[in-house]
Length: 73
Image (cartoon, rainbow, N blue to C red):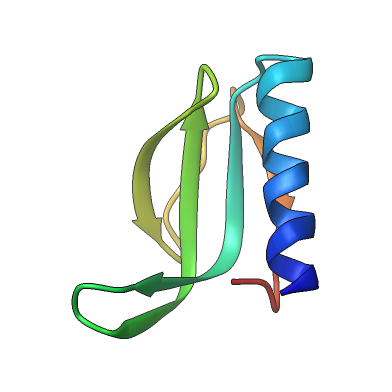
């Protein structure tokens, strides 16, 4: 729970503080509909909102700040 809170605060600070686009890499995403965890996902955030979800190994353009979320959900 502490990790989730930390990740949320990090995302919020980045989204509202700088309005910079970023990519959360190596994230473990939980899909509550399918009750599955998708490891090594990439969450692309643009303009403070989730733009899309990608898979590990996908190319990330230089316009995104990369944040490694290894071990976080």
